[in-house]
Amino acid sequence: MNGPRPQARGAGSGSVRIIGGRWRGTRLPVADSPGLRPSSDRVRETLFNWLQPALPGARVLDLFAGTGVLGLEAVSRGAASAQLVEAEPRLARALQDASVRLGAGDEVAVHPGDALAWLRGHAGRGFDIAFVDPPFAAGLWEPVLAALPAALAADAWLYLESPSDHVPVLSLEWALHRENRTREVRSALYRRVTLAGIDSSSDPQTT
Image: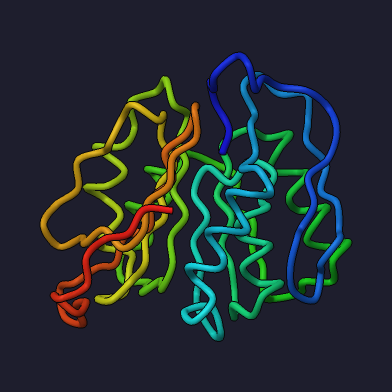
């Protein structure tokens, strides 16, 4: 969740809090890093309401992790593990510090480095849930979405954030499950339907 973002929600030092689960109320630092814009409490509350049935025991991948609030919140709410990938060294160090402070142990691993390179080296990992919020101005949706399926389970969930006026193009193996928009951000949850599928009678819903 790092990289250029709308200027109205620009960078600034402060904190963001985990809003549910065993680490509820824990604050994570928001570094004064250009364009860092963590997902808002409201957006995350909606997302984790959508995901709650899938969280217990899930293996989570948080690409472009930024503050790590999505991956850490997932573990807080019952996911078995989270892999946090972050290219900015200072943010990666903050993620490692947060993991130690939370006593996350083997549940959380931080991977400093490029998300695409990491994906290409970790095919077959079978992650159940992936959070993908790349820098908005970097145009990474296409290469990331092409590389991502090899690292995911056949019935994985995929959460994407993008500018409100941009809908990333996904292959037919992804079915839109839920979608929400604010003035600045489109947030959408997809289910991979390669094997497991979704009830074809259920229409995507917008909140």
